[in-house]
Image (cartoon, rainbow, N blue to C red; front, top):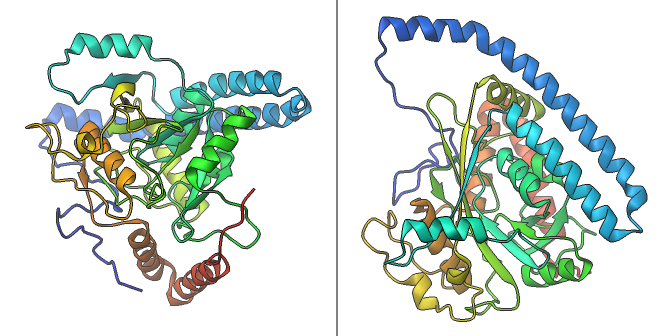
Length: 385
């Protein structure tokens, strides 16, 4: 195991696995008094809202379970599931302080006006079955938003097999910040990403969401993608690809969630999120005609040098995964995030060290042994549906 006691990317100096620390600022006496009042009020509001979140989540789980009786009527079940997800998850997001979520369709081409962006935002159709939504991953809030907005099929990526499997909303929430599983456990059926999207399209299951980084970051940069697109051409016209970026703005507390190894971490972070009076999330989607699934898209467009100020840092192609290199470049230009040399394996190494520091040597050895066992069991050829 490579020690990542200081998980800093050597090229940029960014530490993507550590919670972001806000800059210190001098406060006036009045601001200090106001801060002291908030220290009393926030725990109370946080506790109340946390209880309400639990009640709403329980109600959603119950209604989803009852909806199973509609499974034989697939179209009706889909509408029912979409409706309750939209209503209940929007309430949860509001309780977490996300009262207004800004959405925008952006273009990277020169000469396009801001008015065109507004028109694209207004005219963009809802994501449909057969569409693949590719986005960065920083928190369980990402999962809640995507479930509210699209009611999609969530996936789990396996680095060793370069395949994915379907997971439920609740599983996707638990995967956020968890120890990354690099190989599928024995008996778990997985598929290459394009085959998976096509199979979901045949079932009319809605859009598919994939987090190609394979783990959560602190929303400061983009990890090296798991090369799940390595066998795909550019452009990949057999499916529709939407490149999406989720960004958080904050002052004192960041809603990003990089480490959640047990329920105490999750509950504590959820409580602090509820204690915030408001939180800010903005969503940017790349214009459909600039997607690498568009028939007239060229790999040179995705990998060309960026206009001045369009992106921060040099983002080059991934040799083993040309389409993945194109997507990460476009995502970097949309977010203005740097691309890092670190990947999901580095996150696993960092968590090994984190466990060692916080829970003792025996726990770290146990976790590492479990990961090695999982990798061994899943290192063979992945099973197909």
